[in-house]
Each structure stands twice: as structure tokens, then as C-alpha cells.
Image (tube, rainbow, N blue to C red; front, top):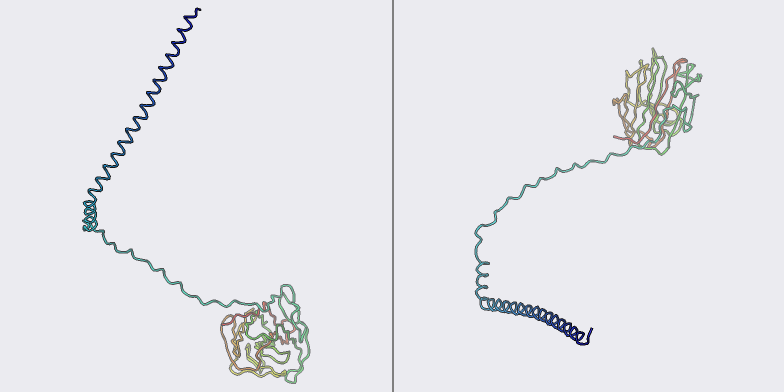
Length: 293
């Protein structure tokens, strides 16, 4: 290659580069120019808008005030409030006093050790509490063979309580049993005695009565006799003592009540007196609790 040809090629390359540079410069200039025009138009539009607001501000204020003071063409409807349902009042209930079991014995597991045996030979007979020993005691100066026993249980500070028990008064002449309340000891208490006698001058068949027993002396409380209660089948007796008032029930039926006696507190007890060798009265399901009317 000659020297002249090399010089021509360099000249051509330089010319091409120069042309490309000119084109790029023109494009950049055009872009910035177009942006400047747009910015100028935006500025002119903003200025015109501000002038319109400035010149028409008064008219706009008037229009706004007129609109604010103008009456509404369609007033809002008035609604009647939906009726409120009043929930029914919850009745106030008087709390029920809780029942406290002070003592109970169903004799299924034998005789509980809490029983204090004052007299007699108490045994279990067919799952019930009864006597077995026949003793000779003096009744109205006549010597007779009798089963006789007293069993006591509870707290000497017991005051108001209910005593319940099931009684099996056998159809045999000379069976007597008693529920004892407010027991001080074996010779001072209140006794509800029920007996079955046949041709016995002191009683007529089956009867029950309350006695005040002091120092071993039995005094019948007036107007407390009850006659014709069940014989030869199990029945339920219940005694409620509250303050100085006593109520007596046979099979849940109130049979008598009385008040006025000297003992303010005391234990409970069971008593049997019988001259029947083969069939002696028995007790079952003894419960003492604080259920009161």
C-alpha cells in the first residue's frame, strides 16, 4: 500500500466520526429544546389560571355563598326510630339455704362407732339397728321380760336440726320405740315414743306421744298423741326442732307440733322398749341435717 492511500483512509474515518458527533449533538439539543418549550407552556397555563382565579374570585365567592344559603330542593326524610324491645326482668330468687349433713347411718357397714350405747345390747338385724338382749325390768311394779336400750349420737351443741329415720314396728304386742332430741344425757331429753300394745290398759293399740324426760321421769306433753300409724311395715318418721318449736311427721305428713321445753341444745338418740322375744322394733337410715322450714 502506498503512502497516499493510507492518508485517504484516515481522512475518511475522521469525516465519519465528525458527522456522527454532529448528529448526536443535534439530537441532544432538540430534546432539551422540546423540554424547554413544554415547561414554558406549563408556566403560561399556570399564570393564566391564576389570573382567571384572581379576576373571578369575587364572582366565585358570591356563587359559593349563594349555594350555601340556598334551600335544599329535597329535604331528608324523617325516620321514626325502630321500637326498642325491652328485655323481661330477671326475677330475683331467694337463695336456698344449703343443707348440711350432721350425721347419717344406713347401717349397711355395721354400727358406726360414734353411737354411745347408754343401755342395752344393740345389734344389727337384717341390716337394721335393733336389740337382742332380754332383760327383766320393773314396769308398774310388775316384773316382766323386756328388751330395753338407749343409743345416743351427735354434738351437745346441736341446736336446730331435722332427724329422719325409718322404723319397723313389728306386729307384736309390747313394742315401743322413741326418737330422742335435745339429749343432755341418758335421763334428760325429749322423746317421741310410739308403741303397739294389745289389750294393754295404758294404751290403745298403736299410738305415739311426746314426753319430757327429766332425771329419768317421763311426763307426757299434752295434745301430742297420734294414733293409727303403720304397723308391721316400715314407715318414715321425721322430727324438726327449731328454737323451742317441734314438728313431727309420719310418712311426710305433719301429725303434731308443740313448743316450750327446757333444753336449748343437745344430741339425738334412739330408744327401744319391747317385751316381744321374737320381734323387736328396729331402726334404719338415720339422718340428721340442717334442713329447716
